[in-house]
Image (cartoon, rainbow over all chains, first blue to last red; front, top):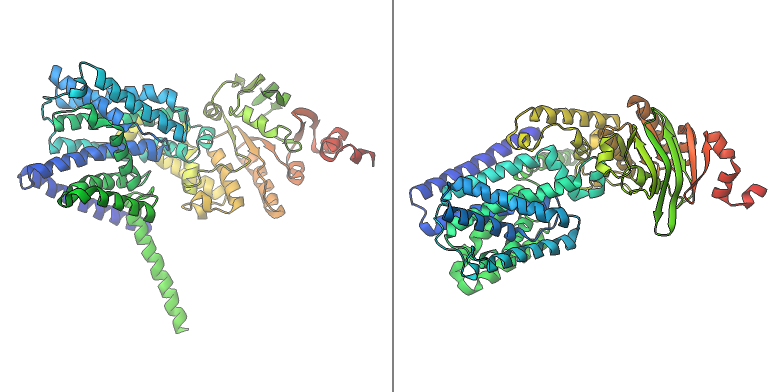
Length: 329
Length: 257
């Protein structure tokens, strides 16, 4: 019965999501959704990719990284430079941006992933700053003046496609023995190693995969803004992505998606109250963390929650039935 | 050929010699116990065997292959699985997932098969599910299948850890105080279980235990460790009557009276 409930829950959830997607796509396609709002939607897609990929590192594998903006910057600059200097097709450029970020992730991950907890956080924070300072001082990146004249190749549809592909890839990855290996490391690294999981390999893999998709998100970002400078990839940016991951729930892909969308749209929606905007935004964050410290979804996925809900009601009904019989007796 | 052979294993921490010239030879389908007072170095021996520590000196061979410098995961893949003195389950995962994870190194699908779901991915996942459920049945944990490991009663957590170690398909099973904290009734049930598992899975069991009833009732051979030195070795009866063992456990006066 529970399986059936999960199945129906998943089908209903998928249908609602699909209807929403069709509606948004039609809106963008027919220009019913205006240029500004479309821009917000593109950022939503980019943030979804960033949050989901950071969740693999921080949420599923339990390695506290604060360097996601650094990987995003690598992807953004590599892709922008490739577009400007080679004129290769956008998907190729994006993939190369992802590969470059992954390689940097590998390079950073191998030495730093020996560190745990706070120490790793500091090391990755340092990495992010190094990337920013290097970009600031290179000639080819335009230094502090930034890099302009990037062709606006990111459309809502390409960003959306990238986000959907990212979600599919990460969901498939998590729901496999490889995914369970990541989670085992988060739960107990020593036990995971004792069970035959090469924890070093999987930590580096999580780090590189996360970096790769941050790079792709960076590429989309660069070709959306058409102008990038080091200020777009500061420590603040890493924190923003981290907040999305924590808000949605460390270890929940659905959570990251919902949180990325909500925390991108919310500040925009609050623009009406101008100077109080960030106060309201911060207050909401604090309230959520007080009420639900594990984040919106905890480690559960949307499909689990729909299933569990059905089970709970069934349980309640049974209890009520018992109560009624008791009353009659 | 012996499954696990240890020659002159020595482990030093700074100036302290925790294990001194420890030797062991485990054949197929045998069951050997390692006993000794607290701080004798028993768990250190286990940590060396499973690669958690790199021994200062000596050689460890699993199936004839030297494993001194291998990582714990590599040693597990050679057929050595263990449980921990202080239970190390994946506490926030379900009982089912705890066991399922231990099948990890036996999967054949790679990352691309995972992402694109081809090349027998589903078949292998189903296979793991079936084998996990089998283990749950054997260890009478099936009722707890979807429960978080942390919510299990203590005895069940111990059993789950053994089940998880078995999922890693070992030839040698190392149990670090499997009966710690169990009441006599639970210990009796555990003794029967270990006996049964050893025969059913054709295992060699090497265990550390303080509960003498379990050790004496189960082990074919016993090694006694004191201050890192093997002070006695033999059948349970021989060890029980050995003056050096009595001295180590009860002090010198115990002998004179």
